[in-house]
Image (cartoon, rainbow, N blue to C red):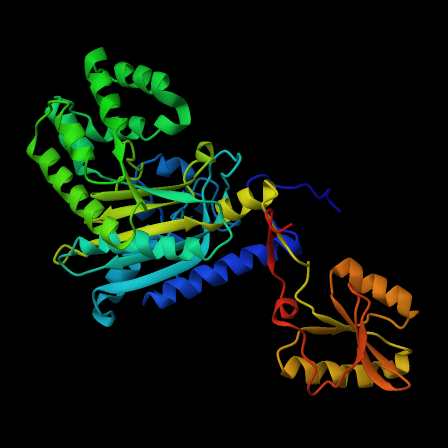
Length: 442
């Protein structure tokens, strides 16, 4: 038998941490559905040619898929998807005749990226995407709605305060064109690394790319601008750069900030360094950070894409945001901010006096489960003290006994033991399911 060794970048939760993740996923799913989004699931693989050329070194990140028996010289034609937006665009094209537009969808699935594993960066992880896509035209008010949806989900989760940063691609593009910069995409990709590598390294990369020192300074001055209202526009104009695309971007982002402040004051921050590395984004872009943990990077990001889904006759523009569920949950658990109240969904362990009692114990378990109570029967008959210790190790709060006076149930935390009827006894709502305990509560 080969030695078992862990694979870096492929996280696996212990049962208690998985409970936390599942509760996050349930809350996110329920919130998306409350806002009218329908669930879909797409296949794990797409043609490599469709996945590639999306920017952010996407070609290098794609895991190719081929049969073990395939010719060694044969290139992989299929690849595991590295996000959920590219397969969603393909899904819309294939099913456009069956969908009602604007189409509101959410998607919660695994994705795979062949990058170097590090804190918060995984090769396999779960994303939760929410998108709105339309046929022909997509009104900008959806660009305001989506961050409100995500904020609604985050407010229901036990996470630290957060901020959603927003920008439009037209602002840096118009600004760069006004400065005479020709490589717009390359400059965007460099600026997008600002939080990771800092201004000095970004300046170095910009000058190495051919920009003058003064032009590089102007690029950084733009990236330093942020505000919680539309005042960013005056700050940009004060830099003295002019271009019609820049004017368009300033107007669009001003409208978004004004509308967002009407519904959720202070939720959005206009942050002009946000660019997003994927090439398919064409307008508004979003990133979300935990306040006080900005160095960890974005836990939720997305943007508008106008031409990702097109069959040559009809274009389906869309806007979407993706929550990095694995990235978020792992961070909170690893910092000790969250834990589950127990490592199992089981609320009741039915103890056995002897193996002869197992049939009756199973009948009791069926009665309790029929009323939504998670139950398991003790793995073996033993002294009650040993069975209670077993329940305690698992975090099971109640043990069910058969006594001379009839069935009784013991709360092993308080020691209270009372008579119980399987047809009527119910634990408290707090004990019925595992809960998430935050650092503040503990």
